[in-house]
Length: 121
Image (cartoon, rainbow, N blue to C red; front, side, top):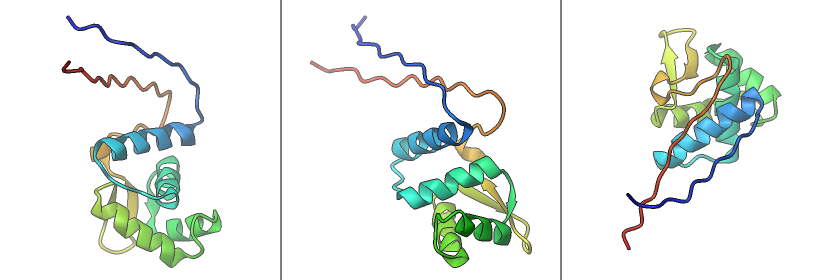
């Protein structure tokens, strides 16, 4: 069996931070590039849960993530193209994080990632 250098860290995070960490890890592994504003908007949606699209655009712009609701809407279109969010209903759309990305957003959360690199030499 190959010898490995094991790094083990234990860190306590806020809910928003642990959601953001999961999103960063998912995007990194799946080679999805997001800027800081996109990531902050996605994290806010994760913390907020399901939200009316129009109300979320207003809320996110009030949080100064983007300057106006239209900029938030543009961001959400980008996130939807990467399958990071899902929309429900035809009118009065409800948005939330996509269940496919398996980001935990409630209760006690422990992340147990096992990531390995095996050297060939």
